[in-house]
Length: 191
Length: 214
Image 1: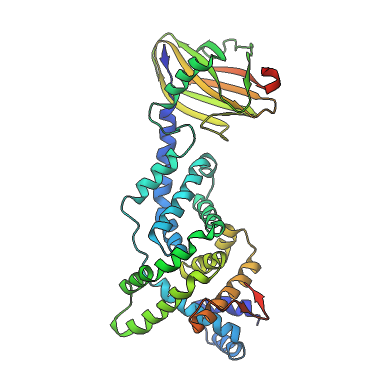
Image 2: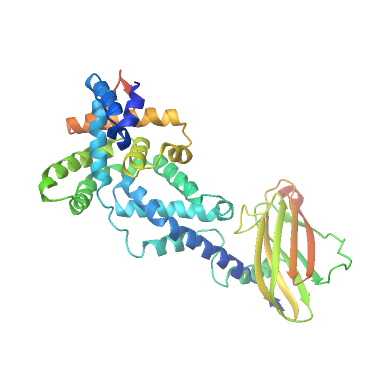
């Protein structure tokens, strides 16, 4: 008696899944890195996202934009992540990002001002709430539109505008103070 | 101008390029400390935008794909192991059902007999289905559909599973590890296609509560 194996069928699914991941990997990784400022943490975040994508693969394969689904999952994973690694990230952050920033600096003449600005951002970035950090990175660094953010976060456009503004104001104040201690803006509301 | 709107316009280079819009922004900024802070933040964020992201580790994507697909329960991607393992498990657990069917041509009378099996909740019961073929059949398509409150172990949440396989002459055994959730069971439908031939087989699966088992 012969045994029938389903493995061939699953392998075909795995191949399609691999193609999907390879197609969207760098955009996921890029955003994850902006959020975490760590190569290893970004890879972990993408891995967890892909793990969930595989478990729902048959469903997301039918979607018009599976990348939006994956980004939405990664966003939730990031903002819901426990904060136990945040302290380590703060400590490890400066060297990593500064090295990156220096590698991509525009030219020797602008180097000092550029590096100083980047260094100030690096010092306060981990002190911003994860959800606000995610929004700032997606919209103001990676250039995602409000419509795309609505799809990713599930928030309404008006709410996103408001939160982006408040996050920018807080970040601006932190940059000026050179610290993450500034916690209140606009009439004492907390971000 | 509301601060939220100002903030969004600050981030839009096209707004800055327009003299009229630029004038409105500057006027608002002159009297609004919050928006000046937001502008300062945007300036820093746009600086970072220009910075390259470091490359991930070279083998990261392969590891991510491998971990993601292997992480699924019951070894979904374990090469050649899952179904062979399930069949071996069936011998240990006792066969729930062994059903034999023969591929028939179009227009032939379909099976009307629906066997019943009972499976204890939350642990797999193995339903064995034998597909008999007089000749070797290359690339037969098998479709397993699940209805009601049952799952296949390792494929939780999937209601339809399709794949192609080669059938050998004689009896080809397909072992399905069926899970019930104690809510009444469901129906397992197996369809085998080859060319214009189709065989459909249905099994009613009942959930066996612990009281029933006793």
